[in-house]
Length: 463
Image 1: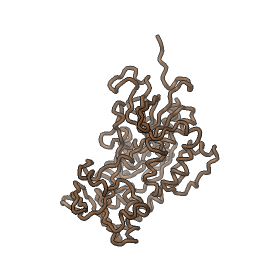
Image 2: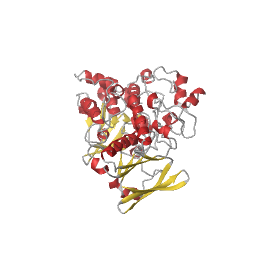
Image 3: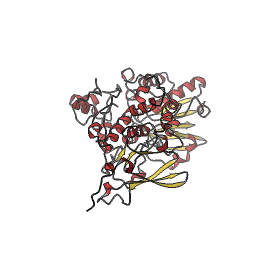
Image 4: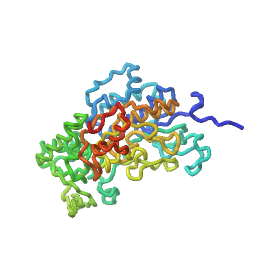
């Protein structure tokens, strides 16, 4: 009888690589960790360059400084090549993140030969088996189907880390989550993402009535730039539609935020609202849009009243994004039905339950799926939740890389410190505030978990 050898126990020379999907910050960090552990890998990126999604908002300044944006294994690899590290306290733009960190990392000889650009993954399965078949599937390689420059390719891998992100799959304008035909027909007047209002997109928004939908940091960034444009062209009108009722919740921790730049966003948008530069419509649920004489009107409910926002020239949609799960239909995944996050993370990040953005550090154990050695990491692991930080993704892939190399002790160790958001106690979705949950030592609360586990590297979200 021939004994089967697990794929991760083969000699390195005969071992299939670990496939990483997405060459953004988290995907490249995964490559650096696997290299450091002597594990072969291949890195598959749909875009024409690394950090392709970040290039779409490259004009935006991050709110986290370099200290939180550079992975430790990647930094060691770069320093060994003579790279000059930026100052820890400096805050980069998206362009600087790509040009000063991601591109130099991708160009290293340890990474570059394994990078496949312009390669779109279309399907993942176990070689020769559909998801229905169980016997022997964990001994089979993954088959990753992709298209590169119009030519089909199939890669084989012993494990997969899916770090494709969610930025390229924005949520629609309507509050019911559906892309209507009317919304699709108005694509020339709707932008999903963060426009360069003070740069190449200035002419598009100058002296226009602009509706911004969404209550997160992307929306705030857009609104603040529109307010600056309004100072130049005072006939620019700004309407902000949010589904939340409490603006204090939207403003965030401000002076209490562990990331001062993030806190400043809240303070600045509060000032813009209170000055009258931005008209706010709270508790506004958009139900439909239509075009009338070249203008758009958005109809919905505001509280219990039917409301219409008329004469809109442009709409910026910042209502979050969602993961593309279409290519894992033949993989046994465990996905939360509401957030579309990795199932085990949902209780830590669900905005219906938690009022604070601080999330207990987690790693390989929480990110497992029924399909052995398949992992969703980075922003995609959070599904539709929006509290993800790059540092969280770096810890995820460090832990998974250790597990794939057979070091379960390292995989289970927490090596992460996250900044506080300063918003505990604001409350969310009718649930207990994070502070209340910690007071009861609720193990299902992200903060309660941190307290209960006494993790020394993450402070309690309530201080």
